[in-house]
Image (cartoon, rainbow, N blue to C red):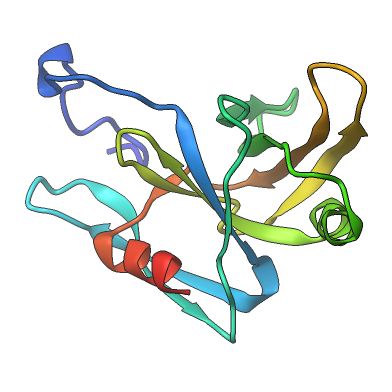
Length: 177
């Protein structure tokens, strides 16, 4: 038996209803302050791979309300010429806050720090990005004088797992900090 095998049907009839995957909120914690635990069997359906516990050494999850419709995230498979496979998690968002001395400090922190990110979609999905290695800025731009005023940040990391959904207990920890 192969190590990685498909174990269930993926049918369009499995989900009935609207889906709005637009990201409405972002939570960032300094990567060095967070430890996560993933479980195997997480529900009565037998599906696996959910962040069930987040512990921290004084970590705070900082809530970021991005500019409307400015957030994108991806979890992309990368296959190298040698056959090695890994994933790249990328999170891009804009802030439309006034650029003052406080946002200057935040801009530097986002540019130079390393983060565990949680994105929340409008349909209530909570996903963890960069759990194993932490996301770091690949671009950080301050712009003005056009429709794109503000700060734009792209955080990325090469990882060895796909984005992980958060359990209700983990969501409570993220919200509670």
